[in-house]
Amino acid sequence: MNLPATGPNYSYLFDTESMSAWGLLRLREQLENGLPLTPRPYQTLAERTGLSEQQVMNAVSQWQQQGLIKRLGLVVKHRTLGYRANAMVVWNVPDDRVSTLGEAMAAAACVTLCYQRPRRLPDWPYNLFCMIHGVSRERVLNQLAGLIEQHELSNVDHAILFSNKAYLQRGGRYVSNC
Image (cartoon, rainbow, N blue to C red; front, side, top):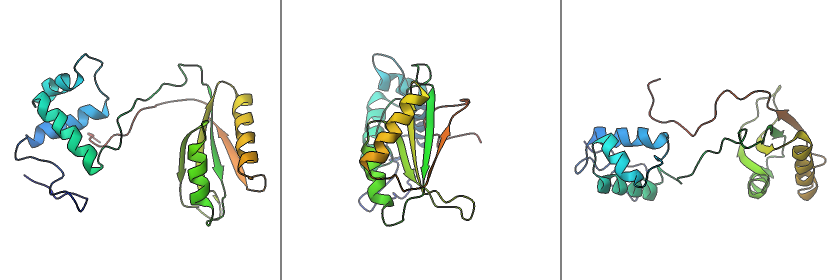
């Protein structure tokens, strides 16, 4: 079974002529749980999926080239490390500035997540969201004050939403039983 690619430069999203479609699906599911902490993580993934180590490496490489996998990273359990003050700052940015400001905020060292969402008027006027993690509320508020000053945002309406309790933190899931 071959499925059409989403990009114009790729013949197939999954190479199921040389690899098992079920093995590739299991590999995607395994990758969502993170790389195994073993000396040869691709070999461990191969054993878990019924693919060979080379097939695992080829699939990951192909998915990176196609943009299905943008990056392999780690999810840091920031609360375990002492970062207990977590604030989502929401901004009501003029539409003509949201892209420029979003890119600038995303480049700030203290911002760990930044994205644009549509406003939900009349109750929710905010269109730019950024997350700041810190060891204390004071530290987060100081970092926010620095962002406001640096990007001349003192006249931009915003709200600071500090987290009260964490229920779950993990990477994205695309293969699920839900």
